[in-house]
Amino acid sequence: MAIRELFSVLERVDEIATLAGMKGRVNEDLLRFEMGFNLDEGRRQAVYVRPVRNTKIPMITIFSPCLVRKKGMFQGISKKMALDLLRRNEQVLFARYGIIEAKEETLIAASIDHLLDTLDPPEFEASTLHVAMAADTYEREHGQDDF
Amino acid sequence: MAVMTVDSAYHLQTRAICRNSLDACRFTDDIALLQAIRDDKELAQQLQRTEALRRHSRMRTRLLSSAVRVHEKLIPNVARSLEHVSTMLDTSKPLEAYVFDEHQVHAFVSENRNRYLVGLSSGAVNRLTAEELEFVIGHELGHAAFGHLEVAAGVVIELGAISREHCKLLRAWQRACEISADRIGLLCCDSLEVAATALFKTICGLDLPGVVIDPGEFAQQWHGLAEEIMEQGSREHWQLTHPFPPLRMKALELFWNGTNRDGGGLDQRTESTSDAVDREVGRLLAHMRSAGVEHGDPLLARFNFWGALYVALADGRLDSEMLGEFSAMAPPGFDADELLCSTNAADTPSVVRELCLRRFREARRTRREKLSAKELHGLIAGFVDVASRQGSLSERGVEHLTHLGRELGIATNAVHLLIDKRKQ
Image 1 (tube, rainbow over the protein chains, first blue to last red):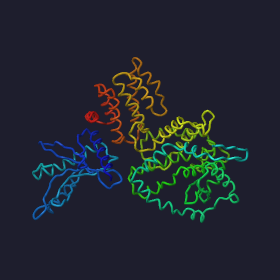
Image 2 (spheres, rainbow over the protein chains, first blue to last red):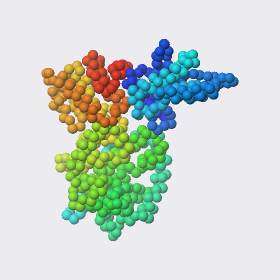
Image 3 (cartoon, each protein chain N blue to C red):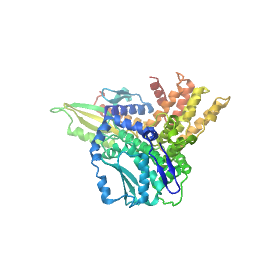
Image 4 (tube, each protein chain N blue to C red):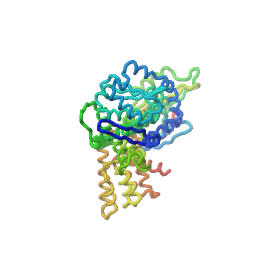
C-alpha cells in the first residue's frame, strides 16, 4: 500500500472517530491514529489504529498494548501465560489477545480488525472501548498501568 | 466534413468525417480520465506489462478459423454497412469484419499491427437492419478511432494486481469510452431513432421487425432508474464496464440535440454547447461512481440540498449569491427556483425551514442502504461549511447543525467536535 493510501486510511479513521465523538490524532511519523481512554480508578489506556498493509480493500487494526516482557532465560512469555491468553479470548468481547514478537522482547496486546468501508461510528466506538478495556484489565491484573 | 446523402434504397454518397470533427465529438471525461490513467505511474507500469499481450493478439487466427469473413459476395448487406462506416471514419488501417455464431446481439473490435478486426455475432446480423448495423459497427470503430484499444483496461483489472482505486478509475474510463463510441455510432447511422432501436435490440435481444424505438421514451427510463439509485444508495455500480442502457440513450439524446440545434450538424457544434452537454452527461455518469461525497454527488443530492438549505436559513434570508448556488444544487427533477424565491418573502423562512427538515427526513427514510461514515462525515462537514460561510457560526446555526446530526444518528458532541476540527 502506497504511503498516500495509508494516510488516506488514517484520515478516514480520524473522520469516523470524530463522528463517534472521540478525540484522537494522526501520528504521521508512526503512521497510526492515537487515542487515549480514561477508565475507572484514574487509569488510562492508549489505543492505536493502524492500516493493514498489503490488502486491496482498506482494513484497519485497532490495538492496545498490555504488557512487555524481555526475552531470555526465565523471562518472556510462559506456556501458562499463553494458555491464559487463549482462555481470555473466549471471554472478551470485540477484542482478542495476541502475542507480538520483537527481537528482544515480546508484547502482549489486545486488538481487533475492521473493514474500513463498512465501519460506522458506533462500531468504532464499541471496538476501541472494548480493546481499551481488555488491555487495561490485563495490565491491572499484572499490577501495571504502563500503556 | 460530415455529409451523408440518403436515397430511398441506401446511401448514395458517403463522405468521411474529418478528424477534427471526430475529435470534437469525443466525450471530455474520456479524454480526462485517460490522461489520469497515463499520468499514474503504477497504472502505466501495469499497462506496459499487458502491451505484449496486445501486440501478439491471436484474434485474427481465431476469427479466420471459427467465423466467416464479411465479403460483398458472401454477406453483401453487412459488407455494405461496413463499407459505409469505414468510409465515414476513414480508418487508418484496413478493416476486416467477421460474423461468428452467437445468438445474442454482440460485437467487438480488435486490432493487430496491420488491420482492425470487427466481430459481429450472427444474432446481430440476423436482427439488426443495415442502418442499425452501421450504429453498431460505428460504435466499435469509434473505440478504435479514439485509441481505446491501446489501453487494455479489462486485462489489467482481470490480472488483479492493481488497487481498488485504480480499478475504479479504469472502470470510470471504460464507461466514458462507451459514451464516446456511441456518439460515433450515431454519426454513422445519422438517426437517433436508428441508434435507439439498435441499442434496444442489443440489450434485450428482441427482433422487433419493422419496429422503431422512440428515443425519448427509452431515455425517459433513466429518470426512474436515477431515482431508484438515489434511494438505494448503493455505490457498487462502479464495477460496471458500460453505463446503464437508459443512461446511454439519454446521453445520445443530449448529444444529438446539442449537435442539431438550430438546424446545424456536426460542424455547427459550438464549444459552449459541447461543454454543456458533456457536463450534463458527466453528472449522469456520477450516479455510477463510488467516489463522491464531494459537492455534486447525485446519491446525496437530496440530503445536500435540503440539509444545506435548512442550515443556511438558520439566520434568516439568503443572499442572491446563495440563491444561485442552491438553484444549481437542486436535486434532479426538482424546480427549486420558486421555492428559493419564496424563502426571502416575509413569514416564509420558517415555513421553508420546516419543509427542508421534512424533506431531509424523507430522504433519510427512503434511503435503503445505510449512510456510510464517509458519507455522514461529508454531509455534516458540508453543512458546517455552509453555516460558517459568513466567517463565523451563529448559535442558531449550531442548533440547526446538531438537529441535522441527530436526524443522521450523530451525537451532539460529535457535531461539536467536527465543528471544532473544521475551524482549525
